[in-house]
Image (cartoon, rainbow, N blue to C red; front, side, top):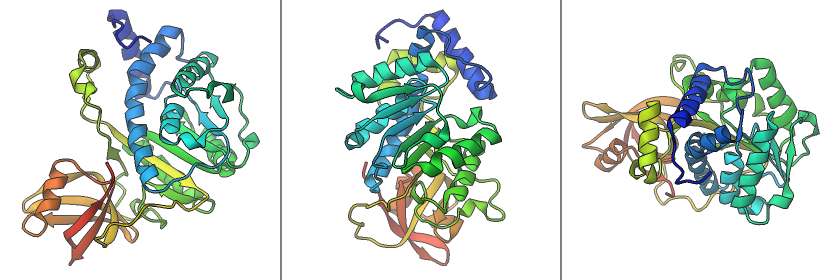
Length: 342
């Protein structure tokens, strides 16, 4: 799609109808890729926003030493192929064959076209698979799943987890940052801990702390940063107005697991308790409070400005990692460092 092409009233209506399906959980009832224009519009707007989430996830995983499975790349439920494009941009060494799977042949053809444009010379290594039995996936495959949970009932999810993912070398699964999707990913994590190591988002390999008592109301999610163009391009402004979408807020949940232990870069000079802030920091009378995911569990911790002014300032500005190394005193955070590369 021409990035500068005019978007008319009929186009906004199509996008609005798609969004209604996604939010209503009815997208899985029937094939919504009805024509080329719908695919173009989806890729221009919805897929672009999903791509911003993938970029945040993949940047973090690369920094943490995540390695692809060593075999083919499978984009399951590929849609317009944004996950595969983002992945190969971040991990060009993955190379090899790319398998695009979707129930819509039109979507797979579109994804193949866009992936061929984005990855020079890679088109010859791309194939489409409209019917893909999970058991035929060869070991070493890296599986990508993106925004598919709302279209999967429990039976279909079981097939993905036990038939597809257990045979993979690694997988990365990105979803909207809602309570429901996050909780389902947490359940997937628990089921696969006997097979894989956790590459992200957890800063540990222990049981998820959100499964403990009194943690039922919380969920694991983060926020990606939209690019500057989202606030300077008038077409994006129109998208926000027409569909009532706040472009500043882009929450996501994800799970990445692999068979080989990630090899991260050098550890920061300041050591402490490795932790991840879930969601955003919240204002507190003396500073901020955070929901801190740590190997020992998930804790609500206070950070007082007079004890850790720099951390409080950083968190109030929305910087949440991906990881911190806390210095703790009596359960409070009194210092620490951010473990990031952004």
